[in-house]
Every structure is written in C-alpha cells, then in structure tokens.
Length: 224
Ligand code: ADP
Ligand code: MG
Picture (spheres, rainbow, N blue to C red):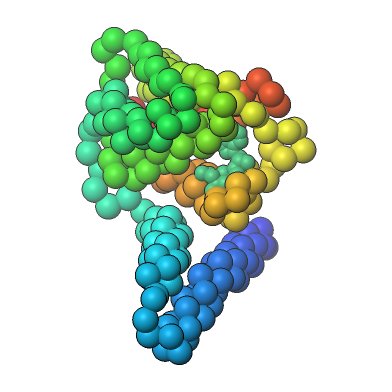
C-alpha cells in the first residue's frame, strides 16, 4: 500500500542518515585517537595536539547538536512570540559573523504583525542557519535584507534576501539534503534541520536563487 511504501522510504532515509552521521563522526574520532597515541609517545610539547583535539571535539558536538533537533518528534513548548523581537535577537547573535564578512543586515517589517505560535529556540535555530548561509554566500560583502509581512489574516511571511553567489539551477534539488555542502568546513545539515523545524511549525519554506545575483529564502508561518 501507499502507507507501506512511504514507511519504507522513510526507513531507508533514516538508514542513509545514520550511515552519513557515522561517517562524519568517524573522521574526527580517528584524528583524536591518533593524537592521543602521539601524546603517549611524546609526553612533552603537545599544545598543538590539544588544540586539534579540542577543535575536532567541537565539531562532533556541533554535528550532534544539529542532529538532535531531528530526533525530537514534535514541538514541546509552544508559545506566542513576536517574530520581530525574535529576529532582532538573532541579528545580534550573527552580527560579528556579518561584520567580519562585510555584510550589512537590514530588517523591514509591517507594523502590528500577529504573534506566532512557536517553539522559540527551534525557530531561532532555523533563522540562524538561514542567516549564516546568506552571510557565507557573500564572501566579498553585501547586504542581507530580512522582510516580514502579513499575508491574509492567517500567515506571516519572512524573507531572507541576499545578494550573494546564488545557487546553480541543477543544484537546487540538493538543498536540504543531508550532508550536501559546498563549503570546506560545512556540515550540510543546516538547511535540512531548518526545513524540518519549519515543517514542525506547519509552515512552508521556499528557496529561489539566481547565480551571481543572490538567493531568497521565504518562510511562511501560520498565525494559529
Ligand atoms: P552548510 O552551510 O554547512 O554548507 P547548509 O545545509 O546550511 O549546509 O547549506 C547547504 C548548501 O546550500 C551550502 O553549502 C550552499 O552551497 C547552499 N546554500 C544555502 N544557502 C545559500 C545561500 N543563501 N546562497 C547560496 N548558497 C546557499
Ligand atoms: Mg549552513
């Protein structure tokens, strides 16, 4: 039946994910093990080894924290939140990252927007992931414009508009796939996790992009 097909697709998806996670975690672990062995052999002069081990451990922590969101079956604590306040808080969080990349962030919104029923920490994570991608897409600087508007009485639309490198058309279907990344230090998990979070909020997310011109990530969230 259709339901069985859907389930088996989901199971194979989970298997792929697990295999991917195992692979991603194995490399930093191998590195840590190697350096521990070196330290054993050479007990003095090991500051560099410590730095590398701590970096690799931080990477494991980061990959696992990105993944834990997916393990949560549904939202636990939903509260009514003002999206503008939420976005203003996040802008503060990513500001140093933006300044280092010569990126200016603007927030435009209509007055009197309705509150959104959400799990704040999750929605923040999705927005941070999307904003970081936008900033990373503008290595020579640029502008990130965030707009928030009401559509009808029942939806709020948030757009993240960058003028960065964009995404080639043939790559678009890969966005949100686990471990798809074009970055040397990327995890390829940020978008997948963001899609999942928006889905958990009964919202929609859409990416439009023109290579060399920029990318717009549009999120629609229900107000009820
Ligand atoms: P990561 O950022 O670790 O690479 P993501 O899942 O966040 O993983 O993004 C996956 C890929 O999608 C990125 O490596 C990049 O190629 C592409 N991408 C995402 N957002 C943008 C954007 N705003 N502009 C250009 N490319 C993007
Ligand atoms: Mg990312």
